[in-house]
Length: 71
Image (cartoon, rainbow, N blue to C red; front, side, top):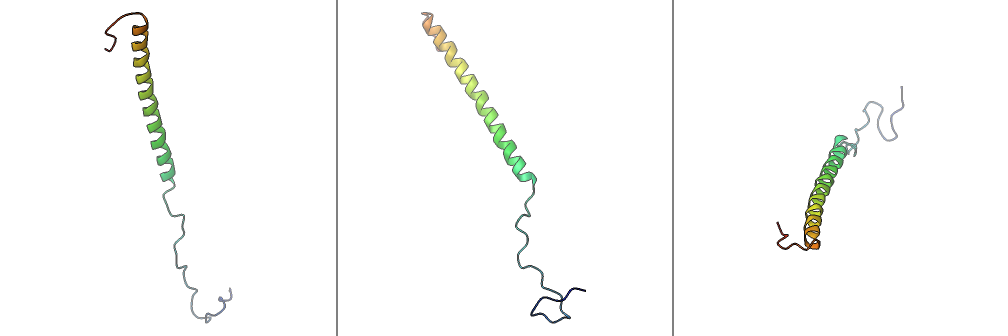
């Protein structure tokens, strides 16, 4: 049998820790945050590709000498 910690009588059980463990968060939280950031980056990249494609078409139209290329 283990000896009781110093300062406690032998018949009392040791006190539980006052603070719960710090690492009690759901381990999937970090993965979900990473997934959300990745999804936002993909949506942003698709939007950027769409805008750049449209700008390229307008520039090609204007450089070919046509007017009214804003469609």
